[in-house]
Image 1 (cartoon, one colour):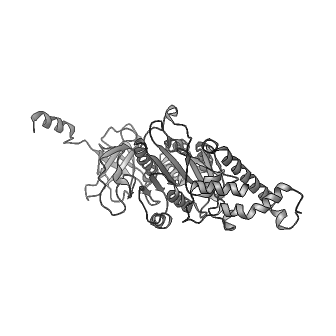
Image 2 (image 1 turned 135 degrees about the vertical axis):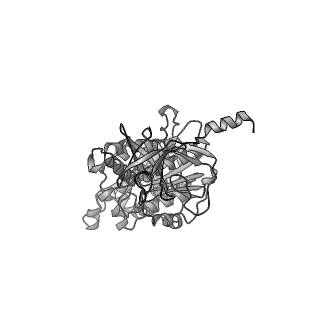
Length: 434
């Protein structure tokens, strides 16, 4: 090796790296001294008594000390253990090798299929798309679910929210969208959910087929930092494929668990709790994640579906309210519809797609509006109809709605395994209304 190349290589290496020392350990943070880090630096915690090591992030800096929030469990660390600043930082490997894999937020495999040899690197944290570089949403994004394609049509690059209480069917609808969409690349982030749900989602909702799919997992037993950055990591993976000019489907379950992770971090750092105990940083973090999805001129698109767990079916929940103001539409799942046996239980009266009018033709728009009106009239007069107080002939529009009720309910129902082509959905919708 030439001397100049050897000299350059040695200069790039830190042969005697500086390190800090742990001075205090609590259940959520570690205090250390001996280094001059900045907020957001990634550090490596190394135990002197065992081979244990763990990553952490610098979240607070004092005059003589700095504080670290660990990404994993800190049991086993002691006063005097070492702290090294990571040269890699918040970078993750990305590439085609991720397709078909299940990984954690740092792209470490969780599926037992061996290491991932991705050569490219991408930052986990990145600024959202510049407003003037966003492309107009003009093409429909087909998901294979009749209610969404026909009445809540999405566009390529749109951000949609799926709002529902616990046990209403968010994961099932997610599986239907992943299976039925025509997107060539699918990135699924399972954030803060039960570990049992991960293999269930893969086998039951996806049928075990992970072709062209990447799943990033941070379960409820992971640290708040892992749950927080798991969402950003998944978005970085989606951005890699978008930058190659491909259309990406991004699914995240759930925004509420992501917000809860930031609540834990914020409260541990002394932030004041506001509505329902959420500190101000939570509300500012949501747009940082959601605004990274979209369509970019000259590149591909990220069409995102974010599920929001609505506590007590209350849509005025602060996380649901903030999410609805950022997203380009919302799909509300109703517990009442599940009682009637209608699946997926999408409440079309409370749901909306803000770009629907830009991606469909006039006939489709008229049919969808007419369907919603007839459905709304049925809901308003449901009690009168059931007790027999309504006499046929008093209201021609209500008579028409009653005549079409069975076909309309049939349109709103779909089995989880069924995928309906977009053209078939539109034709069925027009025939019902005709």
